[in-house]
Length: 215
Ligand SMILES: [Zn+2]
View 1 (tube, rainbow, N blue to C red):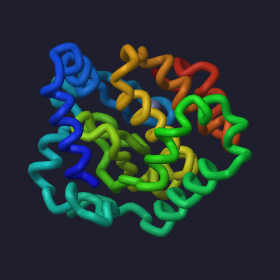
View 2: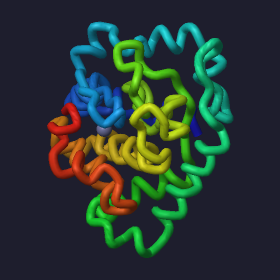
View 3: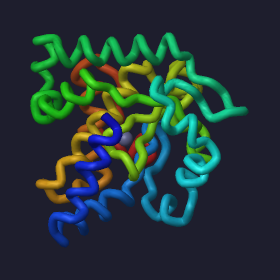
View 4: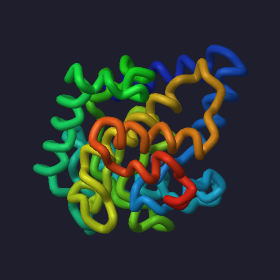
């Protein structure tokens, strides 16, 4: 699945200059969700704050781990059981007819169900400059959702894991949709928090006003 996605992205890069521009624009986007008060700072990424490349270099086995649930060696580990349960809860919610009452789910239904049914969810350490992040995704692979140890347990200010997973999947769908112009950070957070709120009543205050949650 991973190599398939990479092929797709490579094809996109070669297809046209405007798409290439869009890809790179979004490639700079970086999301560190919950903690509920963290900022998203593309410049921070560009200045190396995320240390994603460093992470990949230091932990190539972890990064490509097919089970996707191993934390960075030496770091805190995710609770694999809770993480897997969270994925299952997201699958159930997305598959359930009740979920379609969510306008945000409906908006991204096709993409979200695809992501949930073939989840590429990995445990990853929080970015060094955002140690309380609950989840994030890599600009190198927008379809991959990373959940931090705190995010996998709902500790440290993180909400339930299902919410963090769904939140990140909305970001993935928005950022993978290269047919649409890039969405600004606040609007994107409204969508990402919005699905948590509409499906489970989580983080509704953040969905109403992401600025109050640090964005
Ligand atoms: Zn977010």
